[in-house]
Image (cartoon, rainbow, N blue to C red):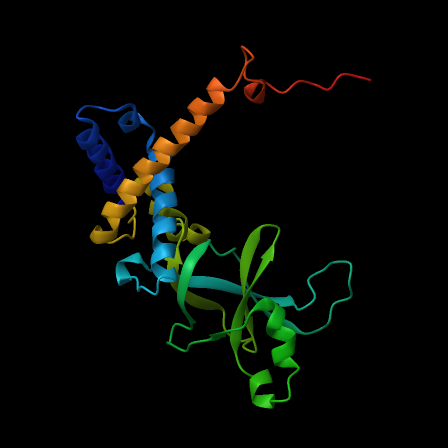
Length: 236
């Protein structure tokens, strides 16, 4: 199912519920997609938390993550260590769960949490210190993938379920069709989950409208101060 088809299914479902063309069916495609995406994330996370498994339809592959050598000390105000590891050139899209990180020949890497890297590399077991693994680090609200103990590869493959299917498809500008025609990319959601996503998206819309109405009723002033055009501060 494409993103466009998911949006059309939502619009049809809303009209079936209301019996006529609802205001919500004429919302922008972007607004509807945002609701569907939010609902999808919530439902898939809930399924995983309950111990469920997601079908392959939900997974996407970032098939060619370009890597570059960086010093293990990335702070420009601290002397370089002289030791390097590999870092993804582009930041990794937000994901719900990961299935694997591997080379193109199917060699898999184990995961080590960022705050546990020093403990692993400085441990007593030499074999553990030399093991090839991956980790993630957030820098300025962006998450990057790091590969440790394998300085000779140029790119790597990651398979996972991502929060935004469009963003994952367009990763690092690799898929120009996803950039130019995002509505025609796959929504990566199985039909049996899609029904729940559509219903949850509708409920999200109802809650947001109810909250907006309550705010309007509780506002005594004729103009909502929270939506006024920002003004230049007055000199004191």
